[in-house]
Image 1 (cartoon, rainbow, N blue to C red):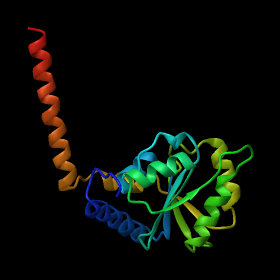
Image 2 (cartoon, rainbow, N blue to C red):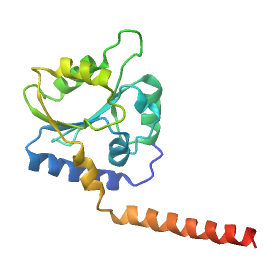
Image 3 (tube, rainbow, N blue to C red):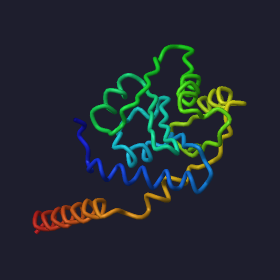
Length: 181
């Protein structure tokens, strides 16, 4: 059982909101490179974003992750992601080709996909390989704002966490004040 910060129902509700927005935009799916999108949507949290990793969410609600082995172990422990593809980080590796294979499995050939281009993990080198791997495979459309805009409106579960963190911060300030008296 993964160690989740929110209930499975909360993650399901988030996924449904993103799927609804994919439908509204006429997209078959979303390729995420932003760690914060992956975390919010699934609970997947890692420092591995400096290496190639991408998460795919289809309009059918299916989620897949492609990442390195160490990060796959983390994903299994802290997220709701079940479909994880591991790429091997060796010289001349091109995980963009493996991402294309993953997208093939999701029937994305010839489809319109949103993509998070505005992401720390999507370096220039990765972009070049990704562009070459997906050229003539699918149509990519800038969608870096998609998950971010949905995250603006907080759910009751998120508000509960924000209130608790504010309460803890207030207590810390009181204690700091006492220590300096």
